[in-house]
Picture 1 (cartoon, rainbow, N blue to C red):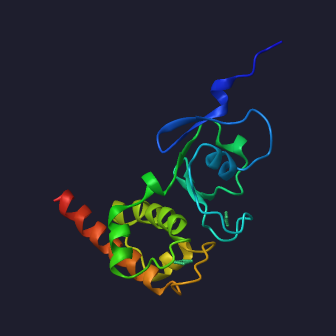
Picture 2: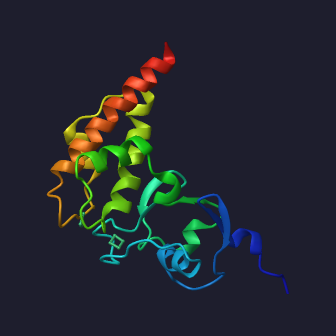
Length: 165
Ligand code: FES
Ligand code: FES
């Protein structure tokens, strides 16, 4: 009998290797929780965005991703995916109230900033609103979140241009 390939049933989470189940249909969120990685779980059906992580650099709702999809891949939670300028801007603009939605929003908007402002592409409030599709926030009305992301984008853009000079 061939032994199961244990190496294939691993992924890295914030740079730390973790073992994934060889079988079963639990979500990536379930497995992360089993390994002590705490992420907010709202709807558990892909609609609220609270559980968002980066999978190989792309935002996904971890409650919808079967753990087998993460094999051999890299997962980043808000612990390593957060952009410092965005986090500072969110605090400054009062964009975090109860905070339940914030980890997922920070993961997605940090990804947006890294793939746009940080590489010299401007972003608008509409770009931020589009990126927030699939993220529900009951407290802020989104305005402060959008303002914070646009403000962080302009700081990141300016720093990136200064570094190129
Ligand atoms: S808990 Fe995953 S999208 Fe709502
Ligand atoms: S800050 Fe409370 S749900 Fe967004």
